[in-house]
Amino acid sequence: MRSLSFRWLSNTILSVQNPASANRAIPFRGLGVGAAPPRMDKKREEQPSAREITVKFKPEVNQMQRILDTDSSGGWEKCWEQGLTPWDLGQPTPVLLHLHHTGALPKGNALVPGCGSGHDVVAIACPERYIVGLDISEKAIKKAEELSSSFPNANCFKFLRADFFSWHPPELFDLIFDYTFFCAIEPEMRSQWAVQIRDLLKPDGELITLIFPIDDHIGGPPYKVSVSDYEEVLCPLGFKAVSLADNEMAIKGRKGREMIGRWKRSSTQCSL
Ligand SMILES: C[S@@+](CC[C@H](N)C(=O)[O-])C[C@H]1O[C@@H](n2cnc3c(N)ncnc32)[C@H](O)[C@@H]1O
Image (cartoon, rainbow, N blue to C red; front, side, top):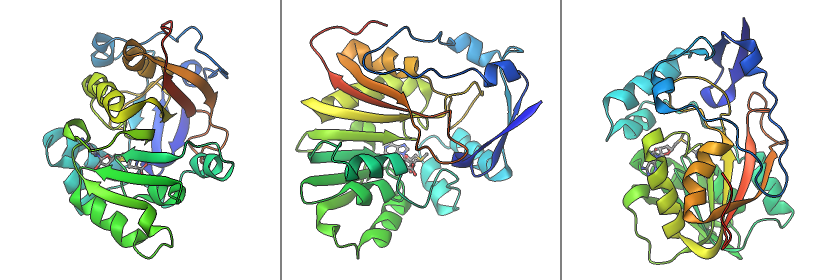
């Protein structure tokens, strides 16, 4: 048996029953989309086989999951109120900062859905790029505002409390950055997530996703994700991955289980 530590879950321990499955190499995928890895269907997710792994979460994570399981409407707010935020890095996501500093991020209007305490929002906001950080939790938005109010770029971003799925902003976005939001929502909401991403993005806008956690665990949040989970909901809407690569700058504990995907809408169909 082998243990893996996931920092999103603040030292969450995954007990892997099938090391061969856990060690599966995640191939580098450059431009374009290759053959998608096989996707587990829902039935299989509900009836775990010996191939899958058992997750032994730390008490804080179990508590968070219990709250979200039992309170589908106010669960996130409760997590924030109780300080159950094991996903929070307490700093901007390194690869996002790198893309910003190397001029590799689109300018214009950008959205960070499920922004939490807003580190990523503040990190990439600049006079050429106005960022909206959106979160359903009032407490999260308050925290994000408190943390960021004295920043010199404070006029380049704002935080809004709203439900991503029913939010209708006055303007569309040039960039949407999703990190640990897709994996936090119920898997059956993913198609709706994709539709909303499409509706919020300008036709030539870009979606950047950090695809995490790529593994085989059961349950969530965070729910396990794979590139094909994104392709399955994005491709039918005309999105194509313009690049997919391992995130070499992932924080310790997420390395090897995180990829960066850059998606744009295209007139040509992507092959699933
Ligand atoms: C796992 S946390 C990730 C936070 C942040 N992206 C990070 O990496 O620190 C997911 C966030 O999504 C927010 N959230 C959940 N459902 C939402 C919804 N329907 N609309 C907007 N935000 C939502 C939660 O309140 C929580 O802050």
